[in-house]
Image (cartoon, rainbow, N blue to C red):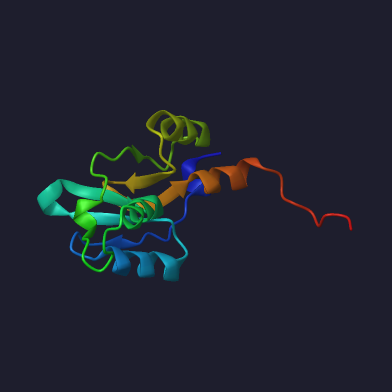
Length: 130
């Protein structure tokens, strides 16, 4: 199975000056665990994850004052839609992250997460016997 078959095509894109609270609200409303941060001044495309927000709040930082650019990962590993799920899982395991931005012709086309891969690899759950 390929990344294009598993990825979410709901791609939330935000700017570097969104507050962490704004980013969290947008991510929550769209039921996604990561947002693509487009910041031409910092090299283009980065990613902000729920863990980045959690780490900031855990340090006592104010989510209304903290800007996404200070918490964005900019050295992103990108996946291609034609990668196998094994290639994506290997990249995640090697890099220690749970999301990959999928680029198609240089543009974000989706995000594939560990959860997406597990959903494809695990058998569908049946109703458990009572």
